[in-house]
Each structure stands twice: as C-alpha cells, then as structure tokens.
Length: 81
Image (cartoon, rainbow, N blue to C red; front, side, top):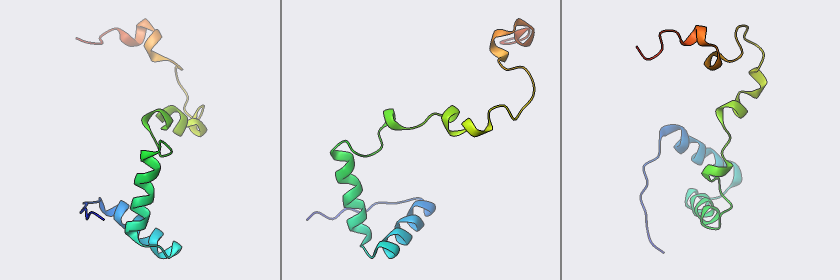
C-alpha cells in the first residue's frame, strides 16, 4: 500500500479523530472508504451539493421587505455607477 500525507483543516481533523474513535476504525480506513466512495461516484459531487437557497429554506419569509430587488427599477437606480 502507498503512504500519503494529507494536511486537514482543524475542524475536519477533529471530526476524523472523533469518527474513528466512535466507530473503532482507523483514520486511514475512514479516508480510504471516503476516497473509494468518491471514485465509484457515490460520494458528494458538485451536482449533488445543495444550493444556498436550499440550505436556508427554513428561513424564507422571516424577513420583511421587497421579495425581489432585481426586478424593481427603483432599487437599481444607481447600480453600476
């Protein structure tokens, strides 16, 4: 087997350690599994990622004001100047 060193952001490294401890698996095993899932097309791809609108769907309607500023000429009066 090949050896690979990877630098991870602190939150991801902490998650990996916690996941390894809770599942009683090695960190290497978890990384290999994630890479294999990605290789097989079963991991998250760009097409499967949610949009910001989807992520904030539960907040829709909580702010008052115009619903769409982009279609109201009044709100675009000095745009781009």
